[in-house]
Image 1 (cartoon, one colour):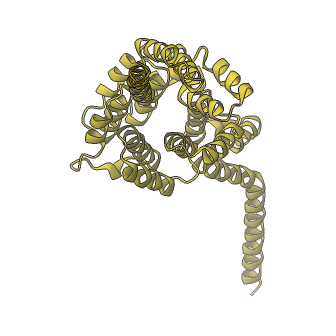
Image 2 (cartoon, helix red, strand yellow):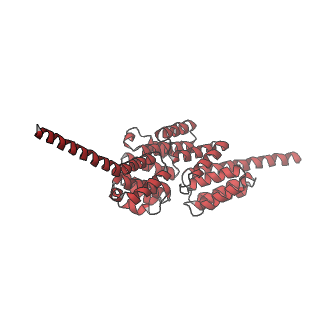
Length: 335
């Protein structure tokens, strides 16, 4: 009887010690687990400021936890989204498909098409490689080839990550915008928004579409939303389209800010010539506008802006021909 009582007391002491140990463990580890989950969620909804804050806290308090792959990947993801200049060197060391694709995106954003092509060639006929080839075709202004590559039915696109699937839809939307396929533009944009409603790239493409369709009030609202994301790196396409919006709104200050931002960006000089060409054409100076647009094309314009420039040039040429015909009619009547 006494032995059973002692064994019972020993078990109770052991259970109490175990509960005490678990409580200490939860108090010690709990905050870190909560921070890791908060970091994962912030990354999934593109809350860049939250990701920054969680990484900063973990750096100060996480100790060895900072070596976890989840945290290292979050740091790379953050640098990719805010345009860190040192990321290229870090990604070169990786050989897996995801990080090679990220390196390709950086080269593409910087206008280094040769380096981008070399990286994407290493991915061969994988879905990521096919997506990269589609992006390359769009960067070179071949929207039809982009659509062919990204609409290939034999490719298992579902093996792509959610972010990569979103990028495919947005790229198809941009290709449709260049071609003028309005139905496909909105269908692909809707698919992208359903995949990742918080992805800031959806806002950017929606802004491009609004400009292309002349929805100026909507474009202004979207422009303000994009500008509010102060962490975003400067982007030549966005600044160019924002400058076109400023011309339409007769907002000299916004126009000046966008032109200043374009200096130093990839294809910045070509973008500036394009914007100035649109500006003088609006003032009625058709020949000067035409000269500026031609200069922009000779500067090596690529992608959607190349198509916009060619379209603007065609419209100017048609207006000049119409003016010549009108003058001929007027002169003939005067005689």
